[in-house]
Length: 135
View 1 (cartoon, helix red, strand yellow):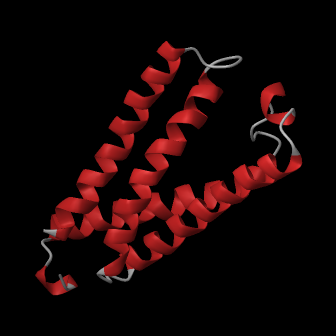
View 2 (cartoon, helix red, strand yellow):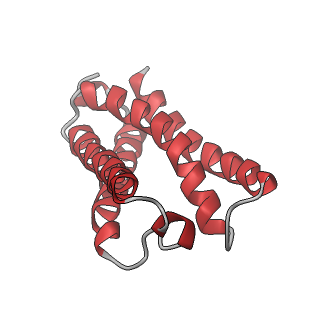
């Protein structure tokens, strides 16, 4: 869809979704520089390659989110597919991160299940908003 074919409400929804992608991406890029990242003993006990790999994965997902958000602001067609795929991937990794952040130690199966529902609902909302614009 070109911008002239979008309804005014679709344009504002597109801007909100693009803003969310950019803000979450910038936050994900800055987060590892702050002391708020994964700091639990189980993560620190991992070898250096595992810790660097986890941080690199998060940085790649965050940079991809910024690219998708900027592309959505510019009304290109490719960022919708990129954003939808990214939301699916982030739902998998985000639920684990949410579970570890929510619990004070290793998450129990109940906490993991709860975190999967919360992250699926949150990413599902953004998936719906972005997908709706692709129709």
